[in-house]
Length: 370
Image (cartoon, rainbow, N blue to C red):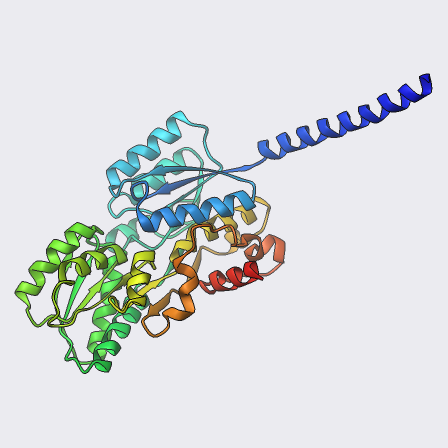
């Protein structure tokens, strides 16, 4: 009988030790998690940046990253103040991912350097004299590992092409206006692409206005534009949210027909493209935050990519009325866990260069459905 109870107790003790080992190992894994701060440049819940954040959260969970978020609320002064407050009163993160606002890049990056935080920037938002002052990654700012961005000029060109081709298909003589975001940001590069495409077609742009990425402001300015230029039939927009504003402004008008397009692949816009009420949307860049996290995890694990490179550039895609059926799966996505960011890791795949492509959405979604 004594041997029986010794055997039972011995068995229970092994189970107890196993449980304790699992608890300790999980706590150790948690303590070893990489800490990353994402500086969301917009307000909480803004459609595009909320999607960027949601996808980053998926990548973080897959890679044992502790992800914190603060909000810049669309204002460089607020963003700098929030970043300063976080760094002064919270545990200093291992890394930061942020988008620089024009006029505030040098201050933000100097602050990160002061706290010895390595960081990656999203999009190329700084141009001209300010860009000349900050130089590039790993130059003046040694903790600036690199930048992940797309070619806004080419993207603006692509959107203009899609809108003008639709005008030709509808036998319309194009009369074009543009709704831009902020002065001196990536929206100017996008509109430069628009102007370049118009030049190839021997056309001119009636006017560009700035609506601060706001739907309501875009709506108000669109009303003024079509009053000033009554022949307007193409409204090129630097964002889908502003394109929705333009659409709201003109949707009750039957004549002339308005061909409207924007950037960001927002769900409402994709639905309106499917309903043939909007023409096009350029996008896929909401994956860039997840891609940034992937590179940081690789860097943390010793991969030399950011030692040998200072940028990752990727191409966007264009969704139109003609190809929307290929992208139906994007409209209903509210759970991004089907994305597999470890497939993109150079540390795991042993590849030399990142292959970041919006086609990852389609590939990962189809594999998940299988």
